[in-house]
Length: 235
Image (cartoon, rainbow, N blue to C red):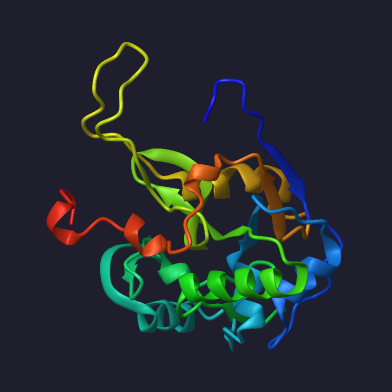
């Protein structure tokens, strides 16, 4: 990307309450003016709602919430009080297996999509069929980070735009060869979109415009972001 490139992030407003079976690609097309080269970021929460990934749970029953989080985990890594850190079947390391009670009807919890990359492909295919534009799609979720305070949105699914851009072998500004640099552009896109979506504004989607077109890939998955166990120094 050139030094003079401009990135624009636009909130997609006007979303109704999303229920199971809703076609998110169709809904986004009705609410937004999309252009080829856009990246559409969609929060995990509305994807889970559209895919029927809501389950009943008593928010005051801590034991029930713990059992639900453990049922969604591949393994439990750490425990502290009511908080558990788990590895999900997707390979994500996160709090409570991503089970979330915020922005859902009282008495229910949202579970992560079964296959967020497939979810992203479905939205992208629907947009392309309806609008004849070629966009990338990122499914975002809010994660904490080891050794750093605060939360940030990351990509848990993507389609049409690279998850990771490998810059190894290219030259830096001083002419030195880059040896280890791999940019997780899908996470950067997700974090940028969150700045206009917020956590309490009921804006569950945004357009990120101006992304380097060389980052667009017909075949891309967020699974490649997950570090293999053999490369992980902390598990």
